[in-house]
Amino acid sequence: MDNNIKLNQKNLAKIAHKIPCPTYDRSKIKTGIVHVGIGGFHRAHEAYYTDRLLHDQTITDWGICGIALLEYDTKIHNTLKEQDGLYTLIIKELDGSLTKRVVGSIVEYLYAPEDPTAVIEKMASSEVKIISLTITEGGYNYSEATKSFDFTNPLIQYDLGHPEAPKTIFGYLTQALKLRKERGLNGCTIQSCDNIQGNGHMAKRMLLSYVLKAEPQLASWIETNVSFPNSMVDRITPATSASDISNLKETSGIDDAWPVVCEPFKQWVIEDDFSAGRPAWETVGAQFVEDVVPYEKMKLSLLNAGHTVLGIIGALRGYDTIDESVHNPEISTFLKNYMDLEVTPTLGALEGIDLDGYKKSLLERFGNINIKDQIDRICSESAAKFPIFVLPTVNANLETKGSIDFAALVIAAWAIYSLGKDENGNALAIKDAMKTILNEKGIAASKGNPKAFLEIETIFGQLKEEPTFVAAFTVAYNNIVENGIEACVIAQNQKALKVTE
Ligand code: CS2
Image 1 (cartoon, rainbow, N blue to C red):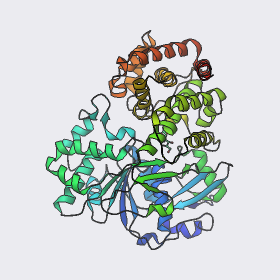
Image 2: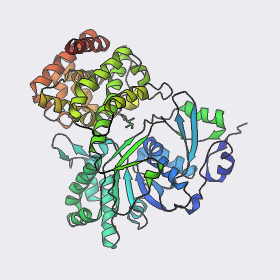
Image 3: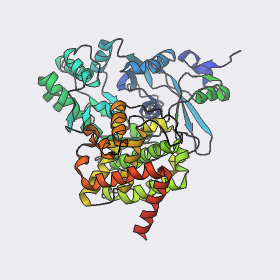
Image 4: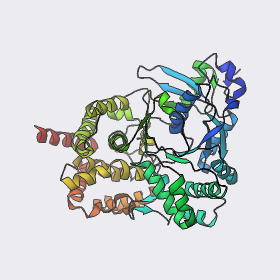
């Protein structure tokens, strides 16, 4: 017989005997934040910080309404609905132990494909002060080729024709802000929590591009009434596995259909620019600063790019998890070299930050053997990630004539990865909105013309016109094909050793 207790509000008192649970009265919490994109990252981060804050007991107006925007989010929406918004956060400590708690800050949830009006009304409601986003790097609809909003996206075209039942975040925000304006309500803050340099600036620029086409007269109201703080959000959150779910049952007797697992480390650096007030997240560990740009740049080009380096190389090599990749000493030396020789010179002054300490801590975090962060997760949507995580470093080094060879090798490995097989001949589970074109260009590259991969302008911009880069990329590509990825990683490390000797 199954003695596990189902996670929901009714059973919370029983569950509290097993693991820490919200001690605040959830029925009294009003929604002050609407969050779009209720995946693991949000639930391990913003929702967790907010839950800690609500334990203050006196704070009742900063509950979260979690919005599932896409049909893809049906499962998480249904799970939250069945569990009254509750879920277990399982922190995988470095020593292998698990710290578990039930998080209660998501007090409402809406499923946009079923009821777009409810979502628009919620975003437009006067009690909502913040609309926060984790819509992924690709969700901002930015094209590297035109360096602007991509109006050719069919979903954007759809939204322009269906303003009251949109499909994209831009359609929803426009409609909600329009209602706020028409009803004489206050503005709000749109807070991007995605891994993008200047994520607030990007959110603002992309939204205003859309608004200028859809509702031009709304643009100046947004300029005056809506703020878009930049923020740097950090916590490694692998996909939840079936064994995480069964382990929670076995060790704590809790039946949670979708717990969230994450590392112990967490960091949130936010610009203090909230046009309608904000929770005192600083009391639970967030840092409010004037300029978040240096923190973002450091995180994106070291942590996220580091993940990409370990992910793409590890995938070709046949590894499944990031810790396997970083525990290969040649790959971790490669990553250290990439960070020191290619990224660090592009970072400029980082006041008050111990960069060496940061880089060292990243290798430790990547190496956490309990996390088992999936290489598939890291490599997913690489077409949206490379232009943010890796290519700015390449472009900066091209300008200063700095080293680009480590990055070129990773990009060449990605071209080969896009063919869909690792070096042992096993199929790679590529998940990417641009999978088809990546594969087409990958095939063209494999026919004696490596450079063909760089023709994807929405990813690479004008990089194919940079002879130094094209040469490094071509050499790297041919070397991988001839000698395999590991030999190339070793050779590149040796070259770096000679240069630094
Ligand atoms: C990862 C991030 O998606 C990725 O490629 O690098 O999800 C990373 O784990 C988080 O940004 C950590 O804060």
